[in-house]
View (cartoon, rainbow, N blue to C red):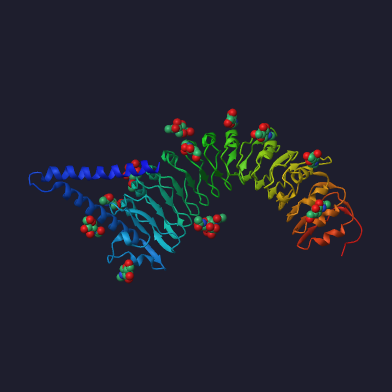
Length: 458
Ligand SMILES: *[C@@H]1O[C@H](CO)[C@@H](O)[C@H](O)[C@H]1NC(C)=O
Ligand SMILES: *[C@@H]1O[C@H](CO)[C@@H](O)[C@H](O)[C@H]1NC(C)=O
Ligand SMILES: *[C@@H]1O[C@H](CO)[C@@H](O)[C@H](O)[C@H]1NC(C)=O
Ligand SMILES: *[C@@H]1O[C@H](CO)[C@@H](O)[C@H](O)[C@H]1NC(C)=O
Ligand SMILES: *[C@@H]1O[C@H](CO)[C@@H](O)[C@H](O)[C@H]1NC(C)=O
Ligand SMILES: *[C@@H]1O[C@H](CO)[C@@H](O)[C@H](O)[C@H]1NC(C)=O
Ligand SMILES: *[C@@H]1O[C@H](CO)[C@@H](O)[C@H](O)[C@H]1NC(C)=O
Ligand SMILES: *[C@@H]1O[C@H](CO)[C@@H](O)[C@H](O)[C@H]1NC(C)=O
Ligand SMILES: *[C@@H]1O[C@H](CO)[C@@H](O)[C@H](O)[C@H]1NC(C)=O
Ligand SMILES: *[C@@H]1O[C@H](CO)[C@@H](O)[C@H](O)[C@H]1NC(C)=O
Ligand SMILES: *[C@@H]1O[C@H](CO)[C@@H](O)[C@H](O)[C@H]1NC(C)=O
Ligand SMILES: *[C@@H]1O[C@H](CO)[C@@H](O)[C@H](O)[C@H]1NC(C)=O
């Protein structure tokens, strides 16, 4: 791929020379000059002057430069040697502008569109403001556009869709408004599309499902509404999908659970209302972060989730899920499990047995990595299993607001890393185990609203 790209670029610059040559030939052919040499010189002069001019006009819009990096952009040296400017070796045209984290502020000059050989524009972590000029669409060779963490406002320029070589577009952390242009689907080389933490509105255009090379789709923290388009299920190369913190409703298209290259799947904090079935096939062998938390999802936790053996963080808290928590014995990398505020549990003994399956994993005790276990506000019943004492890394255990019965197991004292233990509002009885004194890191302990008796241990 690298080879063919270079080849294409080379041929397009020869094409320019060729045009220039034809013009010169038609003007000068009677004068017997060395036409080919002259044509090349004419192109070189016009080309590099345009770039210098464009850079100076770009600089002119920069109003804040406390590190004084733009001072080097002066005529004492060739613009290819200016700070953060990279030129192509052959034609001395600007190919990269890398001005990240330089405390620059100002607006983006439309003359940026004249840097017609630009492949990479990186302005990450500055304070550029105002709109992205539509002239960006003239950058036909642009592959990478990174404007992360600035104060850019206005809409995503629709003309961006003319930059057909774009592979990476990252504008997270700005103040972009308006809708996602459906025409972005024309950027067929896109691998990464990230607009998280902006103020985008409207719905996700179904046409984005045509971006078959896409690996990262990130639109978290915006004001998006509408549904998850069915077509996104076609993006089989996706490794990161996040639309968390929006107002997206409807269901999750089943094909999304089949995106087998996914590592991060996050639809948390939306208004999604689907019903999951315990036999839903979730086919995500590489997923390490899976969140459907803070939605209105009902039904049961799919058993197939227990096949996602690379899971680190699993969140399905704050929904309307009910029934069993499936066995988790293959999840030996799990370290955060959030399932609070649902209707989980059967009101029978053994609702916490999933904890035993976690402990019982075939790889032995050293791989029990669970640090956070949040199961508050459910309908979990039965005793706290003794196996809890083997979750040696547990720091946070929240099980308040359930129907847990029996005594607090003595082995709780084994959990020396515990900082927070919440067992309030259950049906626990018996004594507070004296072994709790071993939990020297405990900063918060909640045992109220139970049937505990006896004295409080020293
Ligand atoms: C443009 O290129 C020509 C020929 O290569 C060179 O003589 C001239 O100095 C260049 N001008 C600038 C501004 O780089
Ligand atoms: C021009 O740039 C050079 C470094 O490239 C710098 O040493 C010099 O101070 C600059 N001149 C002005 C007037 O800023
Ligand atoms: C340079 O950019 C300006 C502003 O977009 C435009 O008016 C002008 O035609 C461009 N010049 C060239 C040579 O592309
Ligand atoms: C934006 O794209 C439209 C449609 O291709 C074109 O007519 C227009 O000239 C472009 N505008 C700029 C400023 O590039
Ligand atoms: C953007 O800003 C956030 C918040 O300050 C920071 O956590 C993040 O690392 C920044 N991202 C980049 C790529 O600089
Ligand atoms: C969102 O982006 C802004 C920069 O534009 C940054 O200051 C803020 O911390 C970001 N918020 C998050 C949650 O990353
Ligand atoms: C792009 O996606 C839209 C909506 O999903 C579809 O109707 C259209 O046929 C697709 N176009 C191409 C070129 O695949
Ligand atoms: C998807 O990824 C595979 C493996 O990296 C790659 O061979 C394939 O070309 C990609 N498909 C698309 C449409 O980019
Ligand atoms: C999931 O993928 C399997 C095979 O890869 C396929 O048979 C099945 O139809 C897919 N399911 C959905 C809902 O796309
Ligand atoms: C887990 O994966 C295995 C192997 O791919 C498969 O046979 C089994 O049906 C899966 N279990 C569930 C509950 O999806
Ligand atoms: C733990 O594993 C053993 C041996 O594989 C099995 O007999 C036992 O039923 C398991 N216990 C639980 C609670 O899954
Ligand atoms: C307490 O921890 C030790 C390892 O430090 C372990 O061998 C033992 O099984 C644990 N006891 C209980 C009751 O879980």
